[in-house]
Amino acid sequence: MVPLIMVLGNSMLIPILPTMQETIGITKTQSSLVITMFSVPAGVIIPLAGFLSDRYNRKVVIVPGLLLYGAGGVVAGLAAWLLSSPYWLIMVGRVLQGLGAAGTAPIAMALAGDLWKGASRAKALGLIEASNGLGKVLSPIFGVLLAMLFWYAAFFAFPIICLFSAALVYFFVKEPKKTGPKQEVKKYLSTLKKTFKKQYKFLLTAYFAGVVALFILFGVLFYIAQILEEVHKIEGLMRGFILAGPLLLMAVTSYITGTKIKQNYGLMKTLVLSGLALIFLPLVINAFLTNPYIELSLLGVSGIGTGLMLPCLNTMITSSVEQNERGAITSLYGSVRFLGVAAGPPIFGALMDTPRMMYLIMAGLALLCLVCCWMWIKVKQDTGGQDRYQKIEWDRKSLAQKKARA
Image (cartoon, rainbow, N blue to C red):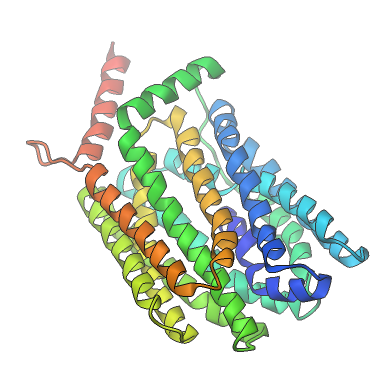
């Protein structure tokens, strides 16, 4: 529920942005900020949420985060309902939602890393990414259906869904108890610094890959939503279904990938590279096409590529660090992903008048990311046939056992 709810914050609003523009008299740039003002606060606050979840526990961050997320929806909804010029207060509500979202999916990812090990962890993280993708699939349709009642109805849906999810997490998630003293900030930062010093090439490259995939996905979705509205006059539920197609392919691919990769990190790197190739090629082809239906079909291929990448990145990142650092590392990952989502709509909106240049620039970005992953995600085989990240985890378990015996 938690990652699904997180993506509702943006995806459910994308199909109704053109309607919002007309109803309250705002520009495309202003409407794109409805996405940005949710994602930027989340991206900034997520590292703090990760630290708090490492210091105390995951649920004490997730539950209040969901409640704040819902409260932001109430503020935005009341503004749209009661004010003649509601834009500024809608932005306040979106900022509150973003602050609440900082305590949702990235912390849920760390919690899954705590609860499961090995192949089970890969499967659990694949399910989380599939849930994230499912939220992206359903949310444009839900957004359009709710807008048939009144355009701002989606804002009032957030508190209902968030309250339900917070209750589920509070009553039914059994979190492992933390042992030992709470981490001091100075020691915690020192530990993180050592982790990054050892693995900075891998971590930064993995973060970069996650940012690029979601930046391009949400940017192209925003662009196509505008084209369907302005050029082809496709409105309502049909637009929601059209935008949901690539996201459905991503969700299904994420689920299948998570169930198959297990602890095979060599396969994970191959899938990350393949996913980036599937994002790159449609962008190059779309640079020379003008039919939005062909563009959308090719975006479906990119959705498959994104679905191949994200479960692999999730598993590699969560498995590369110890439990007491996992919240911060996954939160930083979540943070940059949010910033990628935030940057997509305004940048693609600024480039809408030159679609060929837009697609070629994004294709170049995807190609750069592919080269970086090929160079810096290292999966070396040792003499025992264990790949690098698997060996790190086994060595840590062995060291822990030796300490326990001592």
